[in-house]
Length: 204
Image (tube, rainbow, N blue to C red; front, top):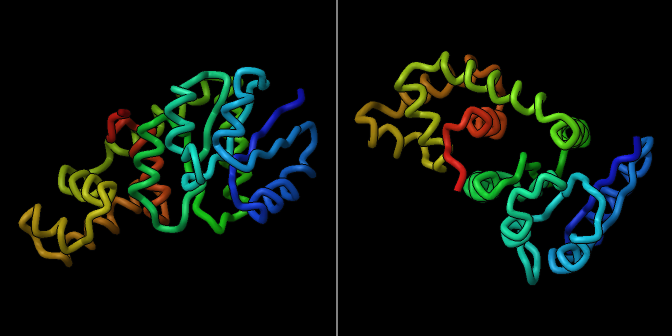
């Protein structure tokens, strides 16, 4: 079965890089757009597919495009952000993005996320299984570990979280290490994905 992926990014080099990586995949049609506006002009005529969507673009931003798509089941958006932009990722996922990839992207991570996006496009059941798995993992956290994770999702530093919870920064570090171990993740990005899948952060 032929699948379609749309790359929406104003950076020619990024589009070319993604196109080179993806065009060698079997049964995959890759189409590029230099702006959100160019993509939106054609979106009504396009086949269902996965959308790799840059957050910062002239004209319609990634967030604007997500708003226009409005959770259209024909498209599964993945946001491309700069490293460490947790706040932007939160905004994007609230607006309907399935996931986010930090630039410079890791090819294996990108392909895994794209594979999951196509699975969601084709099978709603797999997405539901991901939700249940995420909820089970979040259920392992203690109340304090959950509070710490919420603080991290909101982009707060260990010091600010410690102040708000009336504990020491060192204790926050311990909670953070514990929650990462329980969630079986090595980065905040991965923890954030599980938190969103579990519904810890309500969609806008």
